[in-house]
Image (cartoon, rainbow, N blue to C red; front, side, top):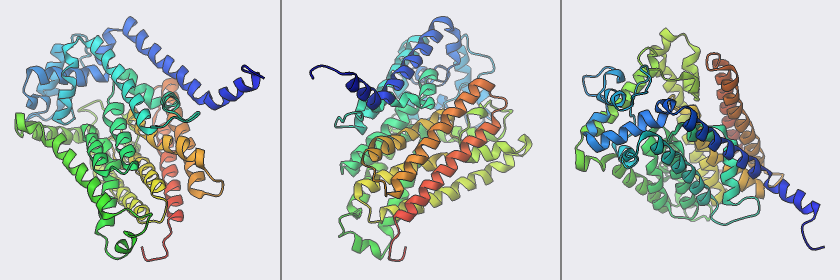
Length: 461
């Protein structure tokens, strides 16, 4: 029978239902942005984009880059030149708000063109840029269209992950500085362009706490290349990473890192770079001393951060180093798991996928400075499992089954945490934060166990 039947419509809705719900979520996100800009324009000056990035763009145009960061004598962000300039520029900014810029000097140049606009149009332009970055990430992930698994479906389904909505509404940079470089590097690596993949991944230094997944992969590949014995035999095997591929990826990563970190010093000297390092040190101090800076602890979304918040506030300063040591120990464990994966006999494409999923999954377990919106980086792991492995999943494959369960559990936990914050407010958020971090930790360790089982080697590890 010609034409569309009811069965065809039901089948199409079933195939694209996730994308349809994502489209509704995108519409809701745009609606929230428009309503906020029309009815609360003064409140927009207190958004993350305006009093962090917009101010940085202005300073990049009119001041020395060194003024972006605290000076050697500054003991808090409140006394910094950047904070003073931000309050002079933004007349409706809350007196309690502290303007700071904890990004490398290269990031300030990105916001300089947007600073030529007034605050509200600049925010809108940045929000459009974030949506475009998400769409470009989906296109990189899906270079060839497939029914129900094309770039548009991947893009729209991403709006069912609430950290994405928060990034766009408040104008954070995770989608542009984190997800896009991560997905681009992953896509290039899968196409066997390791040097280009390393260059793309080096852009994650624009938001340094998001560099951890790539750092874990780089450390594992370096360890595999330096480990004697079995690797020399494996280089002849079809499913093993060659030293040439690992070296090319690491070379691209180092070359890109030098450009991102040291490039601005050609024009401005080492002062801004030293200021950025001082800013990171002062931010760490402020995290453990809540009276110095309102860190918005209800948005902390990492295991070391949650361990710190369980303790009474007077103990935070003493417990920061042990909490970071827990993250370092887990980072060491992640490197060993990734090293095992790199030397396993899994299919190379599957191996690259599993390494990226595992590295991204370990991110909330390692860094204490991760915020809720930074969890948007977990999108890539979800895309790989739900749009890649699920379509090819065999019922007997342990790794696929475990990955699917962990992805659904992490998605539900992350979304429910935001629902709890909106419903109950940020004051009673600690129990919800502990539940979120516990589920993310257990999901990551469960997947790591599946990786260990699937990559058993008959030879000595």
